[in-house]
Each structure stands twice: as structure tokens, then as C-alpha cells.
Length: 517
Image (cartoon, rainbow, N blue to C red; front, side, top):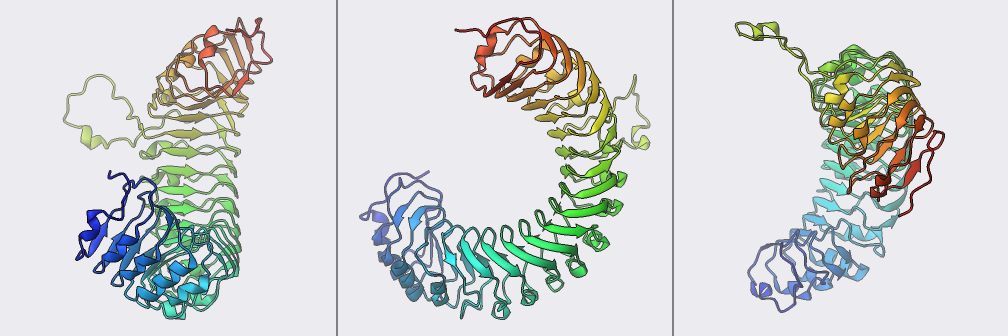
């Protein structure tokens, strides 16, 4: 919480024997980095990150020639070619250089070949760098961490990785690299994180069999195609697999289900087809599973709901049928999205935790009925654009932490909406539109919490009056009662909806003019 300008005559710069200086995460009021840092000739570690420094990086900072670690990241700084060249020339003992979000748009990538041969970590994320990058990096054979993400690099990924076999982290995300991945990628046997998302890489996924230490593989938002080949089956330590937004085809290979350390799988927005394999239920450490925007068909396998750690399940935008009745096993589930499928049937009557073993209830003196154990973990439910029918089960209204309930466009969801829905004090989105609900709209919907931003009950068979009370301070942005059989007048308290951006009352029997105040 230090704040104010760091002046060049600060007594800080009288500490001539200082070896380590960490001023990160403060607020120096947009002041420049003082050239007086050059007086600290014994510095080995200097961290000025995220402290609201602005302006040019002074070339004098390179006078601290003993620096082994320099971190200038997350400021509003510009590093010009002259200053960078002096830094590369003088800091011969540098091991860690973090320039994330420093403007280096004028620095030529080939300049990095002059950096210290001791460098183990080079972080250049979002620096405005452009052109082709010299991946051999000359003498930088000690590199373990290389982050070039979110720049403007172009061209293919060169195949000369033989001199960088110590690399454990390689991040090239959000650039314009293209072409096939080089087979020499397999030489990086120490690699633990490989993040290539947001480029134009293409070809099949067949370069990974030697990367046995890999924990995270992110190839999303590229142009990879073909099937997932067996090159992934050796990645026994893989915990995170992201292949979203490519054109990968075929079924999920069985070899993937042997990677028991997997915690995140995102295969969305591809061309996978066939049924979702029941073998996914064997990945006991899985907590994120996203298979949306593919061509999966058939039923959702029941043993998918054996994944006790799962907290995000997204199977939306496929061709799935049926609706499993065993969702009650997912006691940690927070986000559930099954929208835009062909699911038919009724919404499961409860989202409950697994039943207790009978033996654990013996030798007690319970009286009355033992109620089901409700899981309050669910925050987000989206079953929209399916073929569900009947009513919303009462147990849904007991999910007290729910923030979004979206059931629109099921056509045959019907009956009344219980006023118990107003027990959902954290609800932000309620969309029941394009169904066959009838009866009266619960009057409490206008004032049951101050978090609700979307209330869409359009195109149903509701009758009676619009909810008449909208409290001051409400957060409503979208209010849609279009296409019902509502009558009466527009409630004056709608003036309290000061954040409203969309209001649709059309196709009802409201006999009123819009109030003026």
C-alpha cells in the first residue's frame, strides 16, 4: 500500500549495499523509474512489478551489472532498443527477465539473441513484439521458461529446438504462427506446460509421444484436424487438455481414458462424433469437462455422474438424447449446461447428494421421515433448447446458491411457477421463455432480490397481472413478458428499474399507457 512518487533523491538510493529490492504491488503514482537505481551496484534481484510506474525504462538500470533477476512487468512502461541493448550487454549474470506488458514494439526480436547465456526465464507476454522470432536464441541453452504470448509474431514455428532441451514452460499463445508443428518438438522432454492456443497451427496431433512430463497441453483456437492420435497415450502426467476450436474429428480415443491424472478436458467446438464414452467415468480427478459444440449423439452415459469432483459439466450444442436421472451423484457440481440438444423427458426431481450407507444410520433414534440430502453446490443450470416437458420440480427452488436458471425453448414445460422460486436470493438470470407455463406469475418476482438482471417469461400462457412491485436499487437489465395473456396496468414502480435496457410487454392484454413521471 505504498503510494506517491519515488523521487531520485529518496534515501532508498543511499542503501548502496542493497542486494535484493522488492517494491512490487504498490502505487508510485505514475512516476518514472528513476535513473538513481544505477547507484545500487550490488543489486542481484530487483522487482518493480505492478506498481504503477510509467514512462521509459532508463538505460542506467543496466549499471546494476550483478542483477540475476529483473521484473518490470505490469506497469505502463516502454523499453526502447537502446535501453534494451544496454541491458542485454551489461547484465551478463541475468537469469530471470520478466517484461510482461512492457511496450517493446520498437525492439527487434533478434536482439534477444544477445541476452545473457545464464538466462533461465524469459517472459515477454503482451509486449507488442512482431515479426519472426529467432527460436534458436543463440547461446540461451539454459532456458527453462519462455513466454512469448499475446504478441504479433508470424511465420512457422522453426524446428531448431535441439539447443533448448531444458525448456519446462513454452507459451506462444495469441500470435499468428502457422504451419505444422515441428517433429523436433519431441526433443523437449522436460516440458511441463505447452500453450500454443490462439494461432494458426495446422496438421494432425502427432508430435507429443515423447513429452512424458507434460502437465498442461493447450492447442485451442488453431486449425488442427484429423483424429486424436495415440501420441497422447504416453502423457501419463497430463492434468489439463484443451483442444477447443479446432476441426478435430472422430470419436474420443480410448487411450485418453488411461490418463488418470486428467483434471480438465475441453474439446469444445470441434467435429467429434459418436457417443460419449462411458469410460470418461473412470477419470476420478476430473473437475472440468467441456464437450460442447460437437456432433456427439446418443444418451449421456450414467457413469459420467460417478465423477465426484466434477464442478463444471458442459455438453451443450450436440445431438444428445434422453436425460439422466442420476445427476444427484454430482455433489460438487456448480455449472451444468445441457442446452441445445434433443433431451426429452422431465427435469430430474432433485439434485441431491449421494445417499448415505444404511449402516451409518443404524443404532440411532430417528423419528419421522428422513429427507433427501440436498446439494447446494449448483450455481448455473441451462437446459434450454431441448424437448423437456412437465413442470419444474420443487427441489430446484431449494438450490439456494443458484445464480442462473435457463429453461427457455423447451415448448412443453408447463404448469404453474411456484412462488417458492423467490427463495433463490442469489438468482441473477431467470429465463423460462418459449414454453407452455400457465397460471399467475408469482408477484414476488419483482422484489425478491437485488441481483436479478434478466427476467424473461415471454411466449408462455401466463395470465393475470405483471408483478407490481420493483424495489429501488434493483439490477434488472432485461424484462420480458411478451406473448402471454397478461392484463391490468403497467405498475408505477417499474420506474425503479433504472438499469433497464430491454423491456417487452407486447402481445398481451395490457390496457394502459406508459406512465410519465
